[in-house]
Length: 212
Length: 275
Image (cartoon, rainbow over all chains, first blue to last red):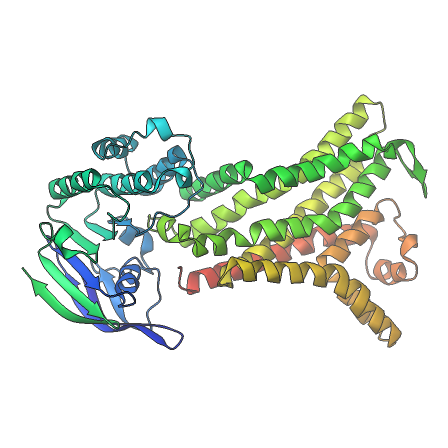
């Protein structure tokens, strides 16, 4: 369970999160929406323990993600909006994830195959030299192979073609049981079939919270 | 511990593939090659000849270029990863900040130290083949001095990297520190203080807390144990401590300084927002 209580985060004089409170339970698939600068990414990053809040707190299964980061992150999968320009080769990146998060390399290869990505053909290529779609597919495969109970996607389909999107949604449907899924998205129609809750944010506040 | 080694290993692999590493290795290896081609080992100046002279020249040039190389290539390691969102992704896995930070330092230390050391090993090996006398005492002293100088500037670079907001600013600060330690303290500040007739002890103290200056003095102390080439300054140093103690200080102090800055950098890294 993710419990966010009165969370406030400022960057200089800019208030990015303004006293946000909400809870995400097992089995919930949430579309996190809002205009640019609404505070969605700040909220996601606070859940991941990247930001020190100016007020309030975040608890993941009762643990603080800053103080207990390794325990908390064992149970979270995250795919960012834009794949970062990691200079490690694909094989090295998979090795990093396999050792640090105890993820089976075979499982990553399995999900990559399901996403129509041939890892062995790109094993020695630098991750940042892969095409945008290939990078996104690999990150999605990693997120699924990690078997986390909390999966956070920040606009995960931005670089994917329609076929790859279908593969992604199919895999997600097969793996969504008893998990918390958080989608940061601008297009509700794309995730409409997957989500059962929609949160709309504006100016650092939750302005609507609907359960379908 | 496995995550610490994992980060160090991957950082090392990434660095070995980088273009800067190729240039870095070529510069130090090229210097040694150039000295041999130029016949430095056959010449004799101020009593220094053969491999001793070559190593002395190598170390004099290294004092100037090693710190700036380390600063420029390392200062962006964390700030650069933060800038381009690599940190955001890599730290979404269960790696502790301590393992990530110190793993990066270990990996980067090996990357910056090995080419400098390797260049000296090549020189000794080549000298051995040519039948030259190997100055082992100088070789081991320089190995130690380079180790500690690398530690000092690596620590400073990681310290800068931990608090700057962008890698451009990090580069600017790194360049300023290099100029400050290399030129400003040595030429401007100390000359000005001497002109103003400041207490000699104060001037020498300021010079000796500069790791580059300490390195420079220690490097010549083996050829010239009385430090006569330094003139009256030598009396102050050797009155205070023996030559052996001075060499130990020259190795120990930059090492501690590097460790102190690296630790400060870690405290900042831990306390600040990660992305």
